[in-house]
Length: 500
Figure 1: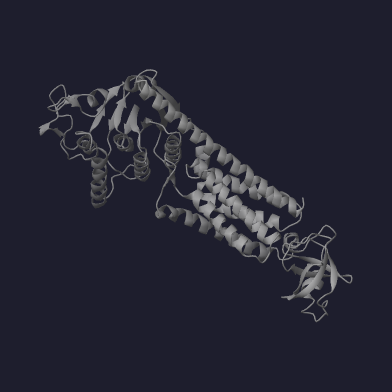
Figure 2: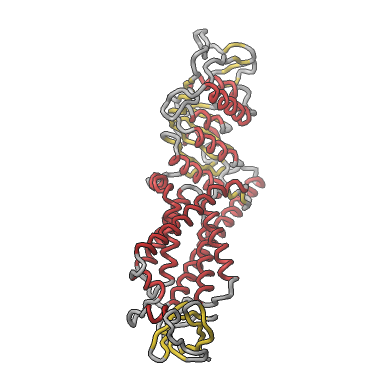
C-alpha cells in the first residue's frame, strides 16, 4: 500500500466516523422532534402524556463494574429523553465512593426517578434508593443496615466514622428534603445510637415495641416501610408494593401510558473493568505502532495491531460510560492532520500543531466523565480532566519507555532500518548514507541530481552518481522514483526537493 493510499484510508475512516456521528445526531434530533410533536398533540387532544421509561438494573455488589453499567445507563436515558428513570435494585451494598458517584449521577437526570427494591437494598443500596423521588418494594423487599464499615466489613476508626457519618447525613438531608420522614429513617439505618421518632413520638411496631432501639441499625421490610405514620398518616418510606417493574409502572403511570426500555448489561462491562488499569498502556502502544507504520513502507502487522489497541482503548472508555463518538473523531482527525504535515506539507507546522492538539483533545475527551444533557449542552467542569491528564501522562510515559527500550536493545534491528531507510530494492548502506560527512567523503554539490530510492516521510534515501545518501525533503512529499535536486545540507544528510 502506497503512502498516498494510507493517507486516503485515514480520511475515509474519519469520514465514516463523522458520517456515523452525524447520522446518530440527526436520528436523536428526529426522535426529540417526534416526541415533542406527540406531546403537543396529546395536550391538544387532552389525552394523558405518554411517558418514556428507562430501567437500569443495580444488581450485586456496588463496585466499579456496576458503576460502569449505572453511568452508561443514566447517560443513555438522558440521550433518549426519558421521562422516568427506574432503578431495579437488588444489592447487599458495596463501595462508598461508587455509591456517592451513583447518587451524583442521579441528580443529573431531570425527570422522575424511581427505585424498585427487589428484594434487597442493604447498606449502599439504601443510600442509592433514598436518592430517588419514589421508593417501591417487591412483597419480600428489605432496606436498611447502612452503617459505614471497611471493605472487609470491620468497623472503622471512631473519628473517621464520625466525619463520614456527618457527611452522609448532610447528603441524605439534601436529597430527602421533599420527604418528611426519609432523612430520619435513613439516619436510623446508619446510626445505632439514634432513636427514630415521628412528630416527636417514638415509632412503634404493631406490637407496641420500638421499631428501632438503641444499639441496633434500622432495617425495614416492605410492609414496615409502607406503615402509615405521623399526624397526617403518610407511609414511613415506601410508595407502594408491586410484584415486578411492569406492574409498578402500570400502577404508577397508568397501563398503556408509557413505553419502557430496559437496559441489558453484558459481560463486556466486566472485561472493561479488568482492562481499565491497562488503558493508558494500550493507548501509548497503539499510538507508537501507528506512527511506526506510517514511517515504514507498506501496511502490515504493526499498523493493524496499533489500530486494534487504540480501538480497545476507546471501547473501554465507551463501555465505562465515558467516551462517545466525539473523542474518536477528534483523535482520528488529529492523526490525519499530522500525516498531512509529515508527508504532504512538511515544514508548514500549522497542520502538525493542530493535529497534536486534536489528538490530545480526543484522548482527554474520551477519558473525561462528561455528561451530555437533553438540550444538547455538556455538563462538566475542569476538575473532570484531572483523571484524563493522568491517563495521557501514563500513555506518553509508555511511549517513551518502550521507545528507549527498543532503541537500546535493538539499535541495528530491522525495525530501525524499516522506520528510517529500508526500501523494496534492498538495504541501504548506513555507513555511506549517514557517515559520509563524518568520514570526510565528498558530498554531492548543491544542484546535483539524483533519484529517490525510497518514499520521503520527510526523510529517505537518494541515489546520486551511483551512491546512496540519506536525505530530507525540503517541502513536498516525494515518492520512490522521483527525480531530486540537492538544495543544501543538514546534520549528516542532504536536503533535497523534486526537480522541476
